[in-house]
Length: 276
Length: 319
Image (cartoon, rainbow over all chains, first blue to last red; front, side, top):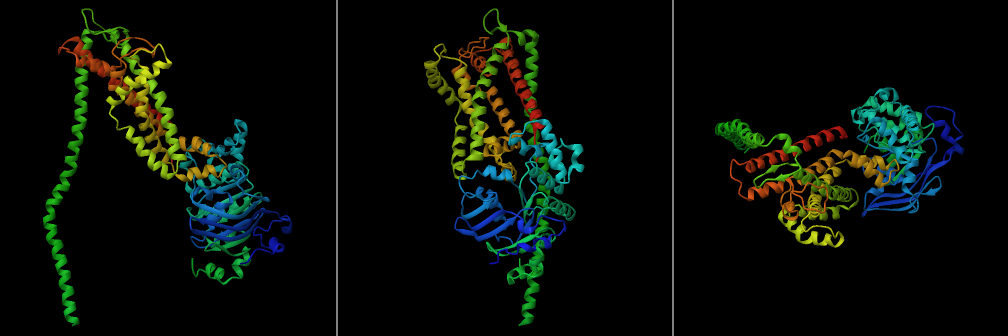
């Protein structure tokens, strides 16, 4: 198993070529250590060791059933909604182990936003969708909420499309718009990390490219972990890529390294489309 | 050998074709049935509608007869209801207050308990527990109302009299409470259906924003299911308004115009039971009063349903 080590090369692989903080100083957001996860008797994740860095896009690829979705859901503990799940190992988020029982899961989730496979706006107005998060965390002032709504929608590049119909039901939007609304909903509570579980798999190519360029913008301020089925997408938007297979991390590398010169045969087979 | 095989194959094919052709002929009868089915079903559907219209027309004509004898204003503003005796007066207000008060008491019981039960079953109970509890709850709905009435009269009233000394042996409080208990399963079961059908992705969306279980329930699931929940309340209210046996048995037949729930009151339904049970000669004012009260009851529930439909359309959250 390869673990990412080449910290010094990070700068070279940034696709947008913007000047960034020196890569070696990038702090680790998520550090996963010896993570094992079982659904009942079935082991879904095996000895995962993975470090995710700040202000990067980390893509997770792999065939269906390889554990990539399970892994990303473990990062905000949504996986616990499955009653039979068992977890061992450590996931350090900003140096604290989130798998600790004393770690308040609600606190974690206010710092770590999530965008799902299928857009899942609430059946409320566009405005209320964005205001929901701030509201449950105690922000009541109409003026502040108005500002948050505008900022978040702008941040998700959807403001111009919806500014005149903030009070309309979110389900009147197209799929791509709904997904950007869901991203805006995340932004409204100023997360540190955004987890994206195949965010474009239900969308058409145009909506997909909009979301991809949005992700490029977002990584300036947020760390993004994205699960994707689409290898071109991973190649286009991510800084690092982890290849999962049968619950294991086969290879975790800079994205251009993994796509041009993978060190594991299985990775090569997968990205050249020989299986999966 | 091959030739034989080929021959057999062709023969089989021919046979199947033939069979289908043959069946097609006999199918013409089937086609006829297909043609008549919609008409038949339409007739059946029309029968039930016609019956309803018939009932309404009867109600209406007899009610008009009643209002020829008793001025409509006196009926609706009259606080005195003395249907028997030489100087009979027909004021419906005592019955209206009886119905409204018993319904309010019932809904004070049924709405909070029913809704909380639904929330527990849909959001908190494990799958296994839910599958055990829900059928049990629905058994409650199968108890005949006469049993509830009997229960109110012989158990709940004596029990309440320990705490409320002024409570009369027949009173509106006890049947109101028991009616509420009777309606709990209806509210709980229908609200639970509405909440369970809210897609899980919405709960996940809210939880991913750091919402607690309670915040997910109150601010996402309940609002998303609100039209179903309100519908369950309305059905509950309609059921309480129309409920007859419990109030007849446990609330007595005093036609008091009062707001004191410890006293005996009569509801519209109980009045109808009382008058039809006694001898009301056809054509008498007493006889017509039945129809007037029934008509009022009907309009009452109709208006309730219309209001509720309007509300639930207004507040509905589409998804």
